[in-house]
Amino acid sequence: MTTGFARLGLPEPIVNSLTKRDITEPFPVQAAAIPDAMAGRDVSGKAPTGSGKTLAFGLPLLARVDKSRRNKPKALILAPTRELAEQIKKELTAPAKAAGRYVFAVYGGVSYGPQKQAFRKGVDVLVATPGRLEDLIEQRTVDLSEAHIVVVDEADRMADMGFLPAVRRILDQTARQRQTLLFSATLDGDIATLSRTYQNNPVRHDAGAVEAETIDARHHFWLVEHHDRVQHTADVVGAAGRSIVFTRTRHGADRLARQLGKLGVGTVALHGGRSQNQRTRALRTFATGKAQALIATDVAARGIHIDAVESVVHFDPPADHKDYLHRSGRTARAGASGLVVSLVTGNQKRTVGRMQKDLALQAPIERPRPDLLHEGGYRIGERVAAGRRTERNQAPPRDHTRRKQGKKHPNGREGGVGHSVYVANLPYSTSANQLQDLFGVYGKVHQATVITDKRTGRSKGFGFVDMPQRAARRAIENLHGSTYAGRDLTVRLAQPRTYGA
Image (tube, rainbow, N blue to C red; front, side, top):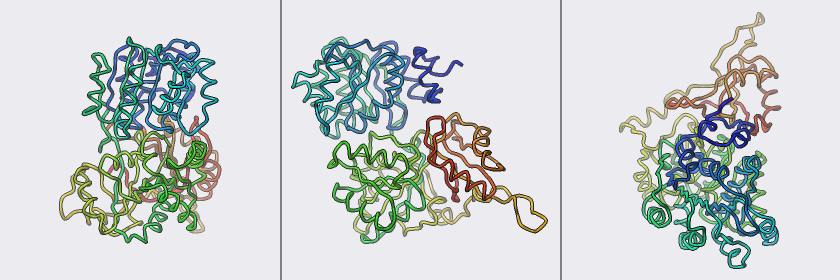
């Protein structure tokens, strides 16, 4: 079968490795950037986290990179955080193995020994954070003079974190004749200067900034008392499911994790004060569903990819609208929808109001309504006429739990009336028939629906299955957390919600 990736000119072994992971059709940024990167062109890509940019630069890099010599990688990918560096390495490991290449990541917080040993054996593609890479260069462990392909990922985040001077020093040590790929959520200001200095006539691809059209989430702003924020957070996590909760400080993250734990919410904390092993363990615990909430500082706002995050909670408001977008982008990834809740105290209303104006987010700051989480909310950029907000919030929800009525049994009980089961993190190629077959093992399926984006027709990666009550509970018990086509499924009873409204 010829896939969309094969048509982009990628080698057959790499395409086959993607097919085995049920990755067959490229995202827009991949379809746009891969042919130019395969042709050896410099590329500037404007693309948000979650758009598929790792494969957009990683696949052509693997197709073109040569085998390395000791201590001299042939390709370099710079990333701003440990989590993103590790994520890129994991994403590229399978296609790299298919291409006969070795990908290795270096970052701080872990010992130097294994990293030095890897370079002695030979690293074809090096993924690195700037700080640790400069340490290794200073120790003469790494020589970048043969790095002919260089990627700077999340360049805007590099700028925000003050890494651009280090990025420039590193780029100055790579091969003079090189291909340079630069990906960022914005391509102006310092990033434009970086492009002019280090790229040669780059072709530019705009896959969209982190804006309304790239975050299909509904946003709520709750006016709360400071001392009630913990309980409100527990309410959101309980109603929404797997959630990332953002705090301003490391201490605040640890404290909130303890407080939510006392309320029965399974939590893990993630911040820069944790060792790399602790951070990796926390992400794994959350990603596998063993914890309901990940309590994080802004270290987690970019650079991590966790499927099926149902909601984001801003326990502490972000510094500005850009941080709000990047935090909120942890949900509603790659076509899925999501839920974002901001907890706002009285003295924060003015600051939050200015941020909403910058976001074009016309949402009232109102009293908490957990019962309306799944039917209300506001989208970024959505125009709502004055005087209609309350009317819209109080509109009756479309209830997925009663979408199909069954026939009555002679004894008067409605044996066919069932429950709607919500299933998330589906492969995007999953059809309604495949969903019906998957759940049909556990009982009669009245109807299976895969939710698609109205604009593109692409699957959003989740759906609903209507089944009798007992069958639904069997399916949830057996399928939640199970692996389907390489993805860990989230399966639970559906809650009333409107999609695509």
